[in-house]
Image 1 (tube, rainbow, N blue to C red):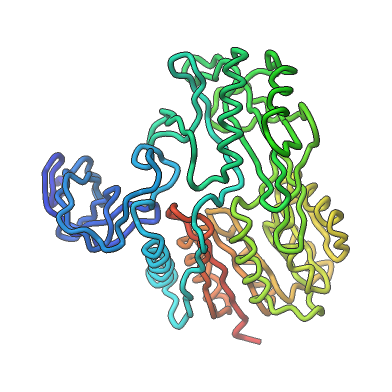
Image 2 (cartoon, helix red, strand yellow):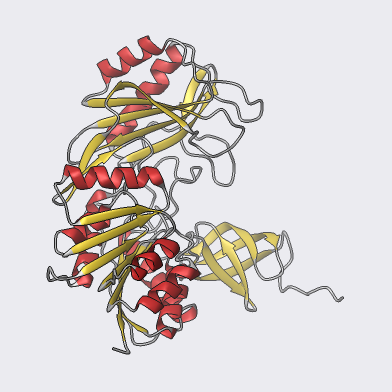
Length: 459
């Protein structure tokens, strides 16, 4: 079989013009139609690059020199931005980020979804796109006898020690600093993934932006935490409004962060926070949105699209800890939520109780199995809300939606590509996509969330 002749060769130095950004924030340049993905390139820029890797359908290169810079290029605020893999777009102004994210959504709607006549609104951004993340979760290592902690260098497991992260709340920077100092002082060894030895694997900090409450989670390889009482006493003395210290034990040789055993070392099992009028109890393992300010924007849009009058039955597939369900319950007659993770449903029920919400019912299981059973029992949704993981909706759930025929589907998505794919399937099954509203939940990164409204066309 003849070898495919590519228009470029490895290590070749060429001049390119960037046309686009990929979904993970790399610049895209094409040579005779052959795409090269290049970190730090921005649309409209002309640069000298060196080809580093070639595949059959695409290649990679690195920038040697930029001849013409984009008007949206800025100097990154973070001193370790170019080493750290935590965010991808600090070299692009915030205005430029919002434009790029709107284009990303628009492009996949046309290319993947083949969806015409849909209104794609400008991205709803933040007034201040910094210091928004309420959860910090970093691996711990060692350098020159001291503990270090931070995100991994891009495409490696080398830890970049960080004093502060400009997209995390400052309170969590303080937690990481103190945990490194105090655990280092008492001789706690970091986990070494090569030798499978050591104690402290990761540190997680959670902060309630409304409540001001802080939780520390120490993820360890061993059940035993040496000098535990002294470490706890010093953390309590130095972390303001600390309400919970939790230990999670993960003894496996794995890069999965959490193990199965979680125990409270000090204080409460949960901290609380609020999104709008709804209060949430958040445990160490709870899924809770990391940007509550923009979550409120996203969920208010979902509530607006649902158009509830108080007479509707709503089903919330992939309901998690009940965040969207409880928002919808404020305006619906009845809300049914389903989620595959039992602990999340425990949280959802606890959150419903916490807020005195009685018109919600939660079930554990796969949405594509639970919802048809509800349908057989005579439970029919006027509005069905889905908020699936990045892989999108399960085909069986999409089939169920098309059989059940709710008047409206509100699709909340963290991945525009799988959203576009699923919207195409629903359009072919009797729905029309009226609107897509992108929301910038994660400034400085390449991610964008969307809320979409679909209605039945064959009433």
